[in-house]
Length: 403
Image 1 (cartoon, rainbow, N blue to C red):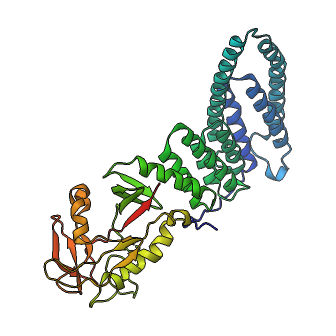
Image 2 (image 1 turned 30 degrees about the horizontal axis):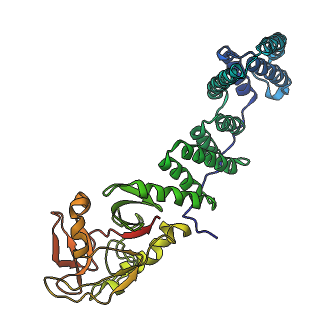
Image 3 (image 1 turned 60 degrees about the vertical axis):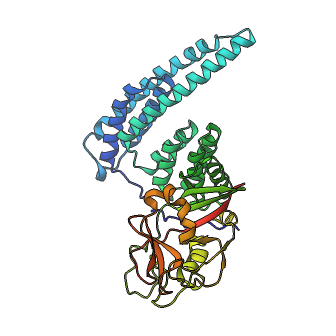
């Protein structure tokens, strides 16, 4: 089973129950808002619904009576008559449209195109009216918002639909509906050529637990890496990386941000700090460092899906002695995630620019209780910085197979 990244917890949406007085106020507002409706059929459906709702509201028990209850019967009758008037006009409109007949293939195609444009415009107009009415009539009510989300998704207002389903939380099948709309949105963006937009939507699906989306997300990531130039930023897994080099279908990436501890983690709590090289002071090499153990273990598991992890190339990491002080660097290693040595980072110093400041290197310092680092002036300091101290950033690097 493909490994998914961490999922965000969703709050359950609370449904709002209106009092009879509040319902009456909302119905009156909706009746006023009907003047915004342009299509006869939509206006007819709203008035028919108002007639039923006012009639039902007029039957409210005496103990729940409210100001305006005596108007409900008259309002129901008024809305019923208006609905009947509108209904009588509908067949005439439909008959008039049906008389528009095309006799040639070209005319039929032109008529179809006009019909599709008109249909799209009409749908958008209806949705705008619906949204206006929703604001007045109770957009925060779960049933209303659920219905609006369905309409938004149907006519291609994917972002609004996704937001609506997200706000609905666990109401009915909102989670599943939201995933379906997100998938359609991703496919829509992919067809348009918006690869990064599609990647973001597939990533959203992966984070919500949709295992099938992991393959599509990886495909988009590979396309973006293939298109990127040196020095540009790409996304792989849950991190942003700077592209440093491409070689035989592989890309060398360095993490855009240095590793940081969790906000809740406090100094001296016994946990290893990701901002250091080693848990404790003393002689340490890259081979037995806490940093290497973390990068090639927990970091991989929490940053990449199983499909992405399979694209991380295993690299023979050469650990050479300190070129100034001659300090031994320990044995060579085989890793999928690493940090640069002094020799390896030099060719990329200009490309990295501001990213090549205050970062730790795996080359040992004056002795094995420290490591070399790049200073704030972008100079390699081979004397070193203590392995157990915070203050110099750890910036991971990976080789990704994208072809």
